Length: 189
Image (cartoon, rainbow, N blue to C red):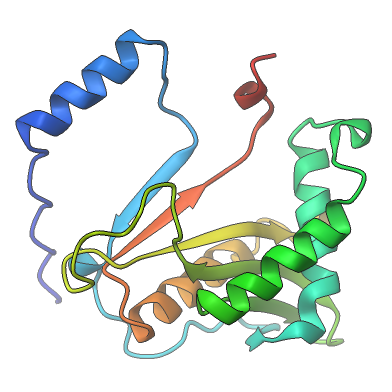
């Protein structure tokens, strides 16, 4: 059996104070998850899931990502009228910049008929503050637009997409991963 990874170190007192201050101002936890890749059990091979294939894709997958990104917001309770009218162009511009500057890739899930049933957008993290630490200390990756078609859910596709994303982060030298997810409460309603 593989030994359990060592527990992550406790947050520094300054971090604890910052968290307490943020909470006192009304910030709440709920939509951000982080992963210390230094404490991740290494994957010996890419995860497989019977009946599905997974691939890193380029610009040919951008339409799928756009469709999934839009569906994700709508399923999270955002009305279509609340989406930016130029969502398509904004998304494609964002992806093009991330592809050029942040090692962006789309991870695509296909069923046996080769239909795209899910996707995840994987890249280096670019904010919200400037990167000031040596990459050996902190080089975070992030994932967004993780989506699986409703009729294909509960089969392990989302988990496999995330495992492929984690493997990608490790390949490009990330030390941590960050996931920010959407749900209606974030808008204050």
